[in-house]
Length: 415
Image (cartoon, rainbow, N blue to C red; front, side, top):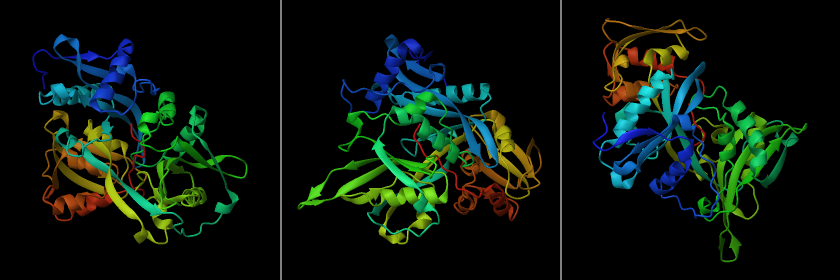
């Protein structure tokens, strides 16, 4: 889609980073003071773009990261779309659609087979072919909630400190190791991203304390888990009723996971613990003795767009053998549109994708294929809802079984 008259795409450039930072504050109504020390702009400037309006002022912007994304049985190159915003004074003019077209074209030209994002509002990106590919669970857990025992957790120590830039390597190393094989977990490789997760402008604390870091260590001192958290001071009738808000919790094994949450659920002066977004199969849900005492909330975690459909499907593995013809509708990327035969001999073997004129077994939109790409078992539900059409009896069940994965897809951080 072409931009309206008077608007043009423009590279951000290193000399205009301040424009991006100010645009972000205005577009997202960030409650920070002018003297707050904000973290540096994290998106590579060569992947950052403005839409300039009449007179050259910034009317919209977007950028993307070059991610390595874990997918079932492998990894793909992915464009992590971010900092997408339109100035309130320039809305309803087609700027978002024009930016999305530009982003998808650049993504394809770089050889990145998928685009991913974290959505500020759920209804926005489906119309651009993005599917809800991973979910997350949040919960409010009472202090002292009992956990089932796990062998080895008592051998582990916990340290507690104010989070700072000096912890970037520790947090980054554990984070990368934990997500190496979790579909949907993009590696946080850039140094600026490792630093940004520890940034703590007072204006964004929402009345809570400074960011704290709890680290679980093995007997030899090696970090096995960490949590970033804040406590909010609340007193009622002379009684402390603090809330612990956990921003991020990552562990490398079962014992470390148990030790971390045992610590978080038993901090002095607190009454409730708010979890971060966690994978739908996170060990915490299995450790809790009384899940009814929690207040869970399900929401989207990651949205994914297939940019190079055959390239993306070939890069992932299937859990079972498969031979299916998919009739895929894609109104934005014509090279994805059409019928594709997907075959696999089963676990550990390559997935093959070829264009075909055979009769389809399943008809679906590219956004719905994207929603199952990381292993989420949405396909039967989409068929039951009338969104996906099955032409060959049993094809949806077979395809769903082959596309499913042994760990739930999940993206643990906002990028």
